[in-house]
Length: 366
Image 1: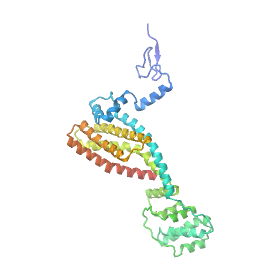
Image 2: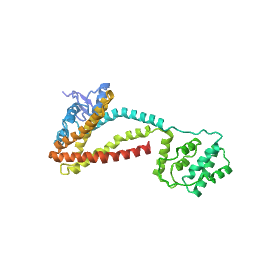
Image 3: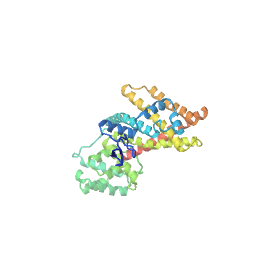
Image 4: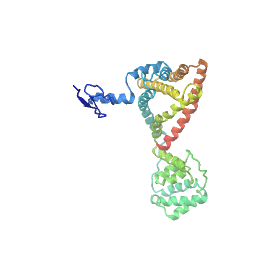
């Protein structure tokens, strides 16, 4: 007598009744969708939060180099995959870090609001005085012949706000206060009073850019830089730039980790393929994010003294030293010097250069 046949809901292939899982695709035969199943599957599929995570977490903290060595040896189902472990821990870290980042952004905005007091001139009967400022600041950024034509054009475009006639504009442009001195360099030390005056009379952005130091032949990046600088000056909110900087850090980590593995490949060129060094890097960065997550979590309850922060930072380098020794099986002395080289190169060159690039990117596109 033949067994009753069922159809898999996933692959729609037939199999005999009584199977707990579909023999074709592996989906559970009778998998009722409940809230528990929904969230468990989500966590399990994307983060593999199962027994392998628990078996991997303690060795990650207390056995430097152990997980990487076991993974290279072929023990790849007993412990969590290095990329999955890194993904899960990094998500936890950046989630916790976002609370600190939000506080820092708010604090920066508050400090800037206190130090950068926005000075906006009220448009009153002194419209000629404001227009004279406009003519003067344009002239400071151009030569005599170009400045006079440019200033007159700019003043004419803002005449609806200044109420000046063309004769008055000509007298201002030709006055003794109209001098020239401009090198076209990017400079944060511009005349804030002049810029505030231009903003108050709704002068065109192009005129304000010239006041801040931009010349006519500026390229796309330079023009973008001045536009962002003016945007920052008007808003007086550096928190937006800082937030953009923090938002790019997770992306930067996808480049820093392979660079770290590449440095290891150079130092241990005859100790396996690049993928082996990448496995070690995944586990080491997972350890770093774990330690930082613990520090952030403790700081929510108790403000950690600075000496403990330094101790934690030194412990991560000591952990690297032990991990390199056990994973690559080299002498203690060689492991010590290579640990120092990796730490020196990464902390003093790679990370600072990355921070500068991220800072520029954050400022240009916040």
